[in-house]
Amino acid sequence: MLHKIFIAGEWRKGRGEPMVSRFPADGSVNAELNAASRDDVEDAVAGADAAWRASSWRDRVPHERADILYRVSDLITARAPELAALQTRDNGKPLTEARGLVASAAATARYFAAACETLEGESPTQRSRDFLSLSQYEPLGVIAAITPWNSPIASDMQKIAPALAGGNAVVLKPAEATPLISLKLAELFEEAGLPKGLLSVLPGRGSIIGDALARHPKVRKISFTGGTSTGRHLAHIAADKLIATSLELGGKSPTIICADADLDQAVKGVAYGIFSSAGQACIAGSRLFIHRSLYDQAMQRLIAITGALRIGHPETPGIHLGPLINNKHRDGVAAYVDRARQEGGRVLTGGEVPTAGELARGSFYPPTLIDGLPHTSAVCQEEIFGPVLIALPYADDDELIGLANDNRYGLAAGIWTRDYRHALQLAGKLEAGTVWINTYKKFSISTPFGGAKDSGLGREKGRQSIHAYMQQKSLYLGLDATPISWCD
Figure 1 (cartoon, rainbow, N blue to C red):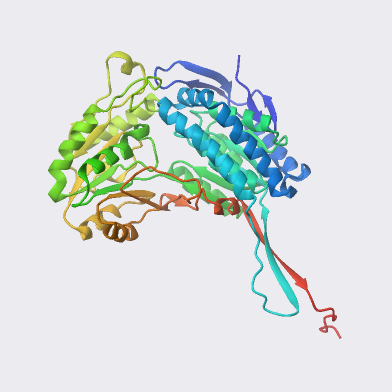
Figure 2: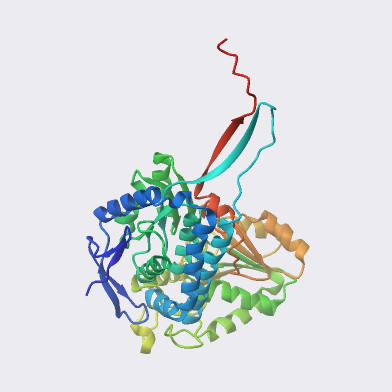
């Protein structure tokens, strides 16, 4: 039986090509469905536009929109075990990570429910006794939200919740590889009482569904998380339409172990920053710079830590790394490691596709540590999106900043040092949207997140992200009862 998709508030079969959702740990089938078609895009956008206008969603007072988000948060929390299990089946994340993503989605809905009640307009300084000016925020309309496969329930909610809080309608295009958790999220919004048509979920290929959605004349904003090349393509579409866009794109994030770092804390943090989620994170700390005075010592500890990480079935308690999303992606990661060898790199641990036992059945790749490469090598410059860490020594801060910023990406960075003055000086010089100091991959929904350079445009999270789905309107109120004398 084909799994149905959610189009303008109705569950029905997609009219696009057949799709199969597979469990990355062993290739077994999770579900079969038809992708959305271009006609389904048309129905979803038309339904969203009609619902946004006719349901008075855009005119509801904030606490009425907040009620829906609070209910969704409660539903996610109540069904957390079921949702975490589905997230793991969808993309192979270990259950412990999937539980964290589910909790994050619930917290995001709850945060934006509260935040939308605190939104305020502005009363600019009065410049004349003849008039009073006001400025208010209004929803944009239909939002195209396009999300990736690595953390779908969290990524989905980071777009849906602020967009709905701002009074908009949302058409969500989840990643082709992970449709199920996004469709489950639609069920929860429906159960929470979201008016029909304000949310659609359209699985399918980005080149077909994502492109058609972005180009639709009634779509007033594109919010995208994913690869830089696709983001650049969508930015061109948005520019041609003169609509807003926010883009959270790729990364090749540097992590830095300074000469005075707590080495035990640093090496464990570095390992977590790159190898958790099997390296499938845009903010993964994939370039490691170690002060020369600590290089050999730090590398010995990293080799020991990396070699001891447990890789296995994502439903097995105690594992550190599950599978990559599919065999094609795994083979791409392996090709980068082979290229590193060709460029003169030394593979110190990992670096081979498992060929025996349970791991041979899925798209697994071991945590891999490489050194001996020049920073100009492709493996040091390009996003691999897998559990591969490249280590390089540095001599002083000038060399460090030059190397760390010598990359087209600027999403995140990490610094390990006992000297916070030094850390803040380095952080100010790093070209990155987020800098972690003596920690890594910690997030707060109240703190804006985004990148610099080829890592994107705009910010998600924080109260400001609701305004990112709205437009500002200025009002002038005449106070002088005397008629305008211009035509006398």
